[in-house]
Picture 1: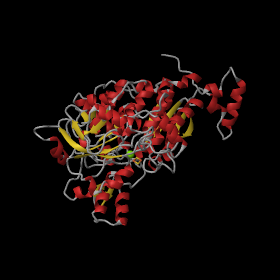
Picture 2 (picture 1 turned 60 degrees about the horizontal axis):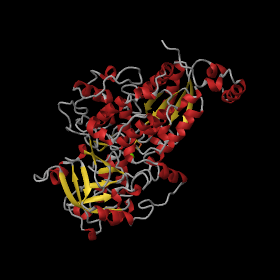
Picture 3 (picture 1 turned 135 degrees about the vertical axis):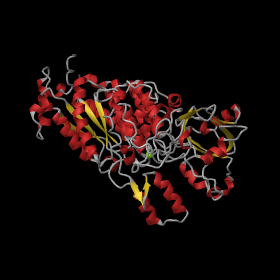
Length: 589
Ligand code: FES
Ligand code: MG
């Protein structure tokens, strides 16, 4: 038995070396009714990193759940201090919620570091809240456990499941074809969000909440419980109890989020059909822990893993079905059974290994969570492409449609490879203005390229790489063209784009040099993407670019700071230099 770690909060509230400051800290935290017993005992002070607010409807239910978390903390003998986190609402924040991930990270680091907090419950849910909070606890280094807000209930419209985000793509098609009017369009889209909670499809939210569990940072089975279910309140209570024990055990994030844990998460991401935003966020979290993780790891560990989870957009079901079929433990149990989870002994937040938590908890409904023997699809992971267009770009192969496959990837003379004429757009506005212009003369042998949409260009990175073909091609039945870009794409979209290109055009990447009319070759065997332009021509094009190409003026002070400091998508879009700070909470322990 090791001695219990000394609580860092005692430096504020019970410091024998500095009675004056102790009195000063104490009087102000007593003033709303806390007692000296709660602040000066040997019981830990637990923060709840509160991401729910009226601005953040996906996470708003956390305001209710936190009452149960407090009950759990009190039952285990802790004292709660709720900490407001900078709001991040995926669908509400302009220009993009992605810009605010690092801002929420920074502000939570300061709150956890500079105040008397011994351990923290991370209220995760909406897309960027999960990585922001995991990054913050990684930097600070105090014991932390994540609590998902849970997905919304299934959406329904005229007897069919309607999934958040995914239904928007369908509703747009119906609206454009004149099959539904404006009001029906609103009604159809709103039907996908019937209750509180995060998106019920396998978009970035379900992905990141599932991966937080696969990393070991949540209690087992907790990611997929729908927000309004009673088990959601029950797991909130258990999470509150558990964080108090984790402080006593000094079970810190770096003991859970090891290299092995990230490797497990990459495999789980392929099995669930996770979002292309996952490599950005997990590479970012890993950097703050000093764990080396890059997009080659995603291909090497994840590509050959089968797709098991039949959720929209790749499949048909939604969040309630995922939970009822067994959620993340069932996915991991199927992987364990087939020997595909690389590190079954990885430690998790409840003090047990992944194997102990999940073994035997196999899928209850194999329509929703398939077995490895009969998957939705084999080889469901990401490819990491490289060439003179970029050093790294991700392609989600699990969403390549049969139509796309037969048009571009099944040429017997050139299997898994294709060439096309580049049609280049400098921004999302440029794309909207020109896509239907007949002068571009786009046909099925063209490759659409979007630049100016990366972390610096947009800023934060726009979810715009999945571009629809011009209307005149749609009418001919060509529903998708190959798309390449330095932006992102919504996890709820089913497009096989080549995206997250790093470095981006605004950061000197090769995408900044390609011109409309250039020949571009994509080879999925060799994982290459190149423009057929001689090196001296590329050099002269580079010399002709201005100092800040593809990056319009900033609209706010944070945008300007973000652009100066941000790393490329491949490195997790983190802030330059932030990863030099690790375990900073020790300064006050
Ligand atoms: Fe918040 Fe999807 S928009 S979870
Ligand atoms: Mg999104």
